[in-house]
Image (cartoon, rainbow, N blue to C red):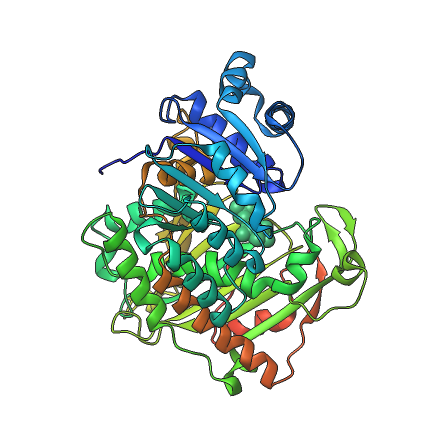
Length: 487
Ligand code: BG6
């Protein structure tokens, strides 16, 4: 990979929650391991009226709170903070940008901008940067979600960005792609020879993708209430996982090749017709209940008003192409569910004929479970014979072939997604960022579902916090004789 590192990083939203929890600790981690380009400066920008010193104090407090203890080292933190600067900036105020440009100074050595802002401010932000010369040839921009609420708003943002930044300098972030475990799907599929021959409609019966969370609203009411689970999790993370599972083998592990293949998958997603939406989608909203043994409030109580925003969604999707004809992809995500976990379960077809049937042996079709978090493991469920003389018939049992990646790589530090993505942004590698055509195809599919909900007046069904969602979500798969793979 050709690396083209920049000399400066500009971090918008520098006082926000994400900056404190993820961005600053990630940049520190890269610094501590000597991975940031020498001399790289980091300029934070936000509305707060800090100066450099006050922002360093703020950043120090964030590192203190969010870094793991074994990563904290006073000397290294001091050295890291020397890289850090700050400029108060109001993205809605055109007068804010010149002082920002002055603060950043010479950008001939390259500038990477990390931009996270409300969709309504993207346009003025890009325009402001462009006007003061912070969008030239040497500048690349990383965009954090939400990148719109639907296809038209996403296009507006993409158009606004494209006026100043061509696609090869635009880095759309989906933090799931930064997860080591998600990249491992590629290694599993394309680094081994034995899956690929059965990785298709002949070999696979169905695929389930679940991202379940135990958290609720988390101080994000303003954003979440206008987004809901479909936009917040399915449009981006779940569809990216689906694409990695469903795509054709890319020729190279490079931005163009990988994204070409993902994009084809998104364009092959079968659009859900309005009249189908009530049958192939289920929405829910959490009611009060107990999560991990603790009582928690309902969504509307947390919000302080009643709402029709979905905190859970389950969808039966199809990828209409040669490889996947007739294979349902069951997608599911929700807040306040029974357990936190991201998992992909691939159910293979049953053997064509069981030679054990005459002797009472029952077979289960094989299943491959790729567990992405909190633990990282791969499990292949295979049939084995129970020990015995079989005088009362053959007893067969499903046993797991376990591969714990946590244990296998116990000595290697796992990096958080943002370490990888920030470094790739700084060094100019677009492979793990989302291209415009991908985003737009994702929105096209999502918008059709929302239209279906609207046309049918569908309202989320209540589910108790600490459960696996509304019972209709169970019916969604059981109708097809498929059971969700729960813990
Ligand atoms: C974010 C969503 O993109 O992903 C959140 O906005 C969600 O609602 C989060 O909680 C989940 O990320 P992770 O890495 O904890 O699985």
